[in-house]
Image (cartoon, rainbow over all chains, first blue to last red; front, side):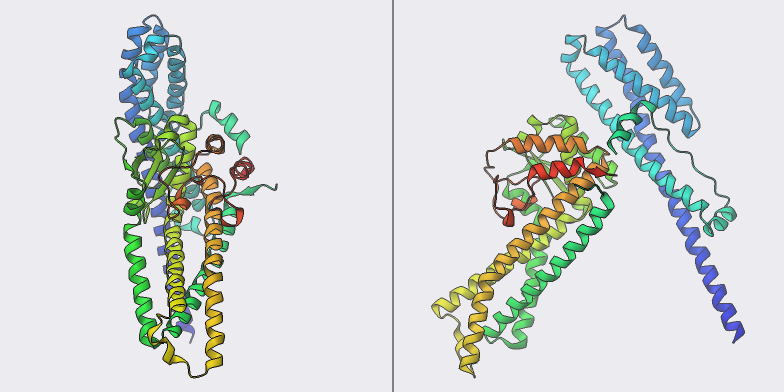
Length: 182
Length: 300
């Protein structure tokens, strides 16, 4: 009788281990997929920035400072390694782009330029997608990190050598109004 | 008004919907049973009726999106001509974690929109040209988020089933009515062994056939209204912004002319009622002012 109970317990433990292991694999894949989504949109943004700069330059050549800043940020963002660095440089790009579009308000010719309007829409689109992809990624990372900390799943997490994933940083400027809403 | 979280709203909604679906099925069964009894079909008739209902539902379900889109004369929205619309749909789909639905446009001055399709992989979103003209990007995003919520919450499936069952019950009533009034019951007359019992049953059947469709319409409207509230809340949650949709609803509410191409069959699909004001009991949509209130009171 004793050995039946022993085997029973063993089976339950193995089953639990397999389920927990697979759950971690799923969560990790989902987080990585979420990051890939962000990455695609960031690349698209890096491609669009030079086009935007060239278009705006034709109308507002003397606003040199912002173009240089944008080019510099773009280079830094493309070279950034950690999630935090990528996020922070890109949040700065968001700010710089806002400035460019604010400047455009002063140039009626530029605002009427079809190419500029199309670029503006494409960048807004990319911008929103980055925000949504970030939202999705951060949600998954939160689940993943929390799952690793919970007992007894944390034992499996340790055995798998899992580490906590970094959140994509939320822009401080954006945070204010969003917090008021919810 | 007390504040509700999305999750409370969601469970409450699902519970109510199931309750009403059970009621729905009971009514359908009662009518079906009476129908079979009246025409003296026996067990084979009952099976035949069930097979007919299943096939009828299946065909309607498989083709529901095509039927809906054709009936309002919607056309695919060209990605170059409708760049913003296509972009917004793509963004919100990304936020909701579903593939980008097909984007349709219908030529209609009333600002309105609907979603259709049996699952997120085969879904379409359709907006009117009036909506595109009246809304800014945030408002459009709010409206699209509402529609995408319908897709993600599988409301379209539920509403299709509900519409089909409602249609079926009304069809049965009409057949029954006609055969009773004009004596087309055929074999029906032979069935009566006990005349008194038969008369009572005929009266019950008559009452059932008058009352049931009414109840069914009320249920359908109720489910539809609940789903609209939920889609508003889910939509706001997906894009983390209830104000775009609230402001869009305000503009939609301010437009009073009815739609040219809508019909009764498609009315419950749209984001706002295409006919304008309808009595509350039969309304497929909650009052816009109430929806805006609820949106502004959401906590997430």
